[in-house]
Image 1 (cartoon, rainbow, N blue to C red):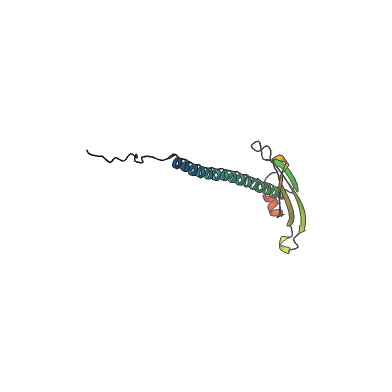
Image 2: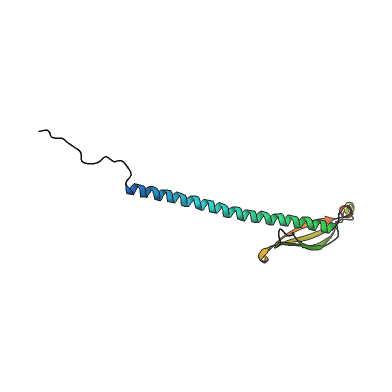
Length: 143
């Protein structure tokens, strides 16, 4: 009589349920980190874009104020057209006296506050100094 020694245990040929669950938990954790990073990046981009837009609007107001002062208008206001209906601008200039220098006899100096009026009633202001003289006033083109 021959006796055969057979191993009755099947050979492993796959993953156990525990191994699959651990892999899914690790994959889920990695996905959560990536999604969080993605949405944080979107939020940062939106905040940066808003800040850049505000800065560009303020620079536009500064240019308008300098041109207005060259045309001898010490205050002004307006909007940015139909594309930005909720944004408005204004500026107020105050003369700070004359230079006292013999080379700048006709030069006047101004302190200017440029204000950007944004949606929701928020305002952002920038105060700067500028000057005006006959040469600048003669180069001024229109209002």
